[in-house]
Image (cartoon, rainbow, N blue to C red; front, side, top):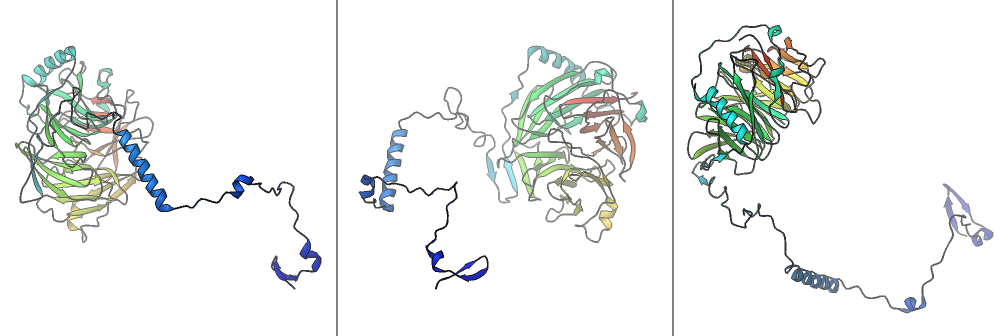
Length: 478
């Protein structure tokens, strides 16, 4: 007698249960599919894999033979051709041809000698030339001056000093070191570079401003040249390092990264050389005055570098911050190993020395400010595991439309840093090397987030920029 298992128990089926079929629910009806007689009598075709494969190859070949006769629209830009179909010389083949030397870490590039004149309107060009002749052409010397003494309460933003610097989100700024003029340069994420200038004697006067399209991608850093103060240098994710002569209104491509890597930051090591960081974790020591330009490469990280800053006191030492969970300190005299590793526990938006060179302030992605003492670095038992002397909470990230806050060195006060604030009312905070807030700058005209902040080296001038490209210039009695 058959035995079945149901609901975890054993029981014996009787004869009456064997003939009883389970009932079909009303919503489920057993429908028998009827097959037509003609299809029912047909034999099922044999499926030969090799035959199917051969047929597919024949069909693909026939399709390709037909498609060869169909005209195809091809990109002339990718083919290095102009609008008339003429071949254009590739800059990678001609201007930036690489000469391999015995030392693979040192590479030599030919400087691009073709100068590109910036195209602007005749009215803007005339106004700019007049201002440049007044501000830059007639007086090329840097007047000797001493640092000003002032109170933060004396600084204010007048209506004339609230203006647009760049068309898009402001990424980096620099201010001219001369004390007889106020010249500010900035770059944005679309590759544009903006310049505004006026006389320091006419602090309430109108600005002369203009924008240049230097790069084809995100511009990451711009500075006035360290030797020729009439030049502006800029780097970009398009892999180019460009120099612009303000008096000649001409732009020169100094260097192009052949590996199609973006340039993220740079700083001047001397009047002849500068350090450039890339988004693939390399640092380049570039001799920008030589022709051809010589480049020495150092692989210092496996991740992207965001900021590079050279110690103002020691030109061979520099710090790097980026997607690594630390700030790395290197020395050009010994690039075989890292000098110090400052633990931040999270990646950083930026890390900078103060002007005294005694501390490094890092702004981390977990919304903190961390200060590291150089004295602690020198006496540390483990130079690759240095903890901050002070760490405080600070809102560094707002949203993806706003440039993250970073603590920038304050030139007039060698131990202090400038950083924007997310609170109300809007302000620029001043922190010392121990992460203590010593002062703040506020104004009725400061009604947006001050994401990028810089200061003049000798004059009571502090410039803050927001993510729309607008700047607010705090000025005091000069």
